[in-house]
Length: 420
Image (tube, rainbow, N blue to C red; front, side, top):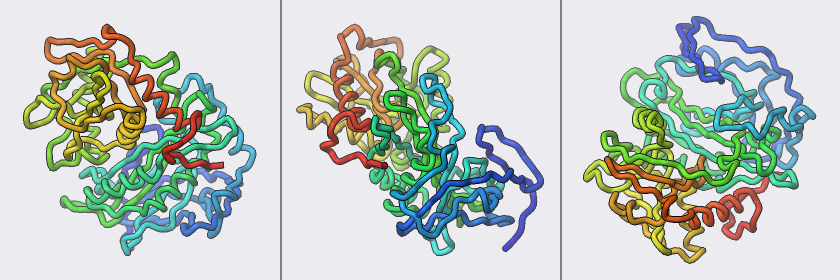
């Protein structure tokens, strides 16, 4: 093993960045959680210090949650873990919160992921030459967990998100977890942080899986070491005072993605490139920007983080997937729900002119769920959907989707996974 004790880049839990010329230490945290696992995965944290590739930070024996055999059904916690976190649930926004545990797993030298496990939520360490820091080799996903009145937990379509991560990993030349490994890791992480799940009607637990090239590189090439991690944070309801429509502006200078790029996967580089246009839009009072295609600058693509839908009579249209648009799970779910309710669904090229004749417009995303659009501004034109009437279709689809996600209605689609 080649030891490297140079300057390490430390990414802290509160998003501050600092430099250190020694490997930082952590304070020992006593963990009394009782874990018993009998699945095919063995969840324990394998320490690795001084590697020339990457570090996940020193973890003491008490900090790592280790066991060779424990099952989800037998997962038990002490009183500190089972009690609800002391928070004002009504004041939750969409901001990171330091919860109890995160999940980490590394890629073995043979190319497979193994030896994953929980550890206390904490900072991670990466060498400055880590591929993710220099060349953006990483993909993310966004899932939700809701708590029901009977204290059980609902996950929404975790297998689909596991498949999306595999597709994204392949596009960025990274090995990926199996779908079974992905889902199991999500379950373990959610159960370990169950006291952070907001009560029913107060919000949900946002689940962020991240797969990155953590190994060191100098030239432009794939890393030789990869890290998968999951962290969670409680999020409040978007519609505390009812569904509040948003205002969008069509972006004419910048584009979100180009044909042949990575616009159809959740590569982290996609989001950084949106920041400039999004910041300008917010400075002018808009919620977000709506991007157009790169070839004609005429056809709708999506916003920074959500797919776009337009409604005309009983027809709902959305831009066809063509390599530049995210095939989001929420998008897929809304299409299935709308079809089941008798709407005609069209996945096709949607021109900018169609916005001015639409009855309603709404956005859907894995984090935002469904957002009705109040107005869209394009050059010197502004169309207001509020003046055209209520967002009846948006409301109908939103209630149908969230009803399934929250367990308020019967899940005839078979999309939810129940955790006790």
